[in-house]
Every structure is written in C-alpha cells, then in structure tokens.
Image (cartoon, rainbow, N blue to C red; front, side, top):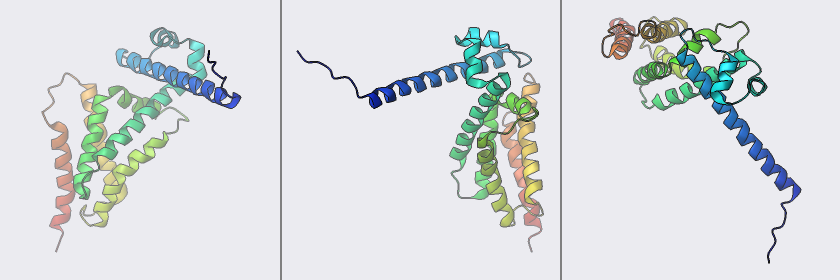
Length: 214
C-alpha cells in the first residue's frame, strides 16, 4: 500500500494562501457585479448595503471588510471601469496617422461609455465626491487621448489650437455625446451621430490650419 507524503509546511502554506486569494477575488467580483446590477436597476443610482448583501450572497460585514464603505465600493467599481476603458482605447491605437488614431480613440471612448452606462454615471458622481482621487488608469486614458493631440499640434495640423484648448474641446464633445442619450434615451437621435459629430469637429479643427498654410 502506498502512502501520500504530507506537503512541506511552506508548500502547504502557499496552497492555503492561494486558495484564500482566489476566494477573495471571487467575493470581490461577485460584490462588484451585484453593485453594477443594482445601480443599473435603480432610477436614482442608489442602493442599500442590505440590498447588495441579499443580491450578491455575501454579508454586509464582508462587504465592508473588502471595500471599507459604500464610497470605497463605488470607487473600486469606477476604477475597474477605467482600467477596462484604457484597454479598449489602447486597442484602438492602430493607425500611425495621428488624426486617424485620435478619431478611433474618440469613437472607442464613446462606444465604451454607451455600452457601460453605469460607468458613465459613476464618472459624474464618484469624480465629484469630495476627496476622491481619480484611479491610476485615468492617467493612462488621458495620455492615450492627449498623445495624438500633441502630435497634431506639433505637426501644425490643428492650426492655432494649443494643447489645453484642443483637449477641452474634445472632452466637451465626448461628454456631450455620452450624456445626451443618457438624459434623453427616447429621443430619436440621428443614426451615426457620434461618427458625424467627431468627423465634423476634427474636420473643422484641421481645415482651419490648412487654410492658413502658405
């Protein structure tokens, strides 16, 4: 008869810690997924920890243990969304031409926000909360947008726009195209609205520079 030798203590400890980490990640994902569902179902974007506990199957103390409080929970959900957005924008950066790349990034941003309305709502609430810091991935998102803008300005393709004003114009367009359909979902918005608006703005920003070329 063969016997199985016990694992060395360090290997056993590693196995236990690995299992605990897997359990932590499963709990975290389940709680965040349930939070997103509750937010999407709520007319005012609010919910109670009690309702969240009933939805996700984890107790309120467990939720507080992982996220600290409700604000921490929302901040973590927002951070996850920002990381996913950064990945989508990175995948949109395929063209070597700065203008084409910027157009792809803008449209990818709008698609992501439209497909994830909970994230878009959180951007407006979590970001305005006193003392809230933007997640690290926000800098990645901003850099992906800013890089082609800087390249276009350096190449003289954005006319008299400086970096700050060009970025503000583009951010205003993004948030307008995202917010309007959310505020008026039943309005008959024109097909291809995002593409037409982005193309019109970029054409206007670049055609001005072309007219000033000698």
